[in-house]
Length: 116
Image (cartoon, rainbow, N blue to C red; front, side, top):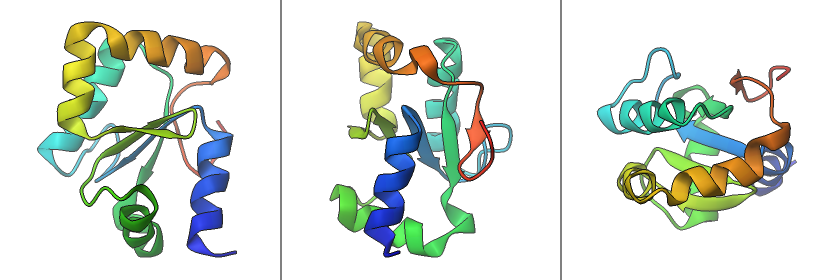
């Protein structure tokens, strides 16, 4: 399976998915930490992937999304954006609306590849 198929499968499986540096409990960059904080402030159930653990996904996402930086937040398979956009949407109330629609059936936070 090529990297684009792997990414599509992940996005299909998880309604809210954060590709980040590190994990929600141990983020490895300030932008990832801020994005996790926003999702937690909204009590969002989300999946995550530590891009440091899969270099193929890390590089493939840059091309797939045409977005060169991380974190990358996806909701229902659509790229919402990175930290700055997530913060702006949170402050305006739009992020809550977007996530509430998508997260209705998602279980607690899980690492991609682990049962959620």
